Image (cartoon, rainbow, N blue to C red; front, top):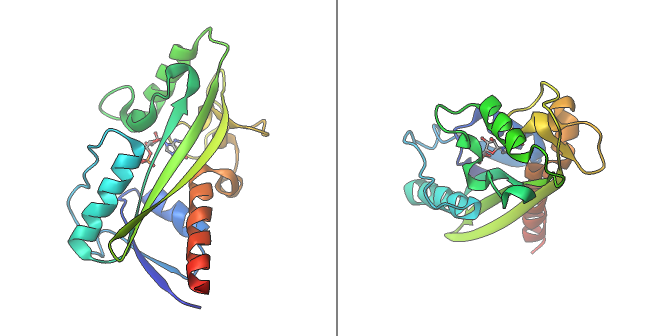
Length: 197
Ligand code: IMP
């Protein structure tokens, strides 16, 4: 089996672990540290797609090794797509997932439309060409926080077809249906197709 080395443009250990579990064993994921990058990655483009591309370009520019960057967020319909690109620090700094969730819940108070989706954009740079893969999982925002697993907005997101929030599911179940899993599935398909050519 062909082995594929990829620098993963993320310092978030939780994400690295999640991506490692989802991708097939033929991927050797190289951490930023092992690729010699110790500085913060730039994330100043103002969109999820822009930030994923910016991070991938930065790593490619520094290492010339194939690299994969991702950017994700929660988009709430009644909030015109917010928190979106600002998901991590929606309620300001220092970052607090609890405060972020409280803010979303308070902004949705009394509103009937609780539709939302999590989106991940993966940006892959191979031989200098950038490819994008989008994963999106649709669902609703719960009335209150439920569950202890996961991170970020997991306790208030109920994916369509499920009664549990992401935070009430075990990791395995979330990883089958999450936005990241869907985007990584597309990436995997891309490599499978490429391997056939
Ligand atoms: P990132 O770009 O993957 O770091 O995601 C930005 C922010 O979106 C995170 O800090 C979380 O607040 C939120 N987010 C992204 N993915 C998830 C998820 O799977 N569950 C809960 N929150 C998430």
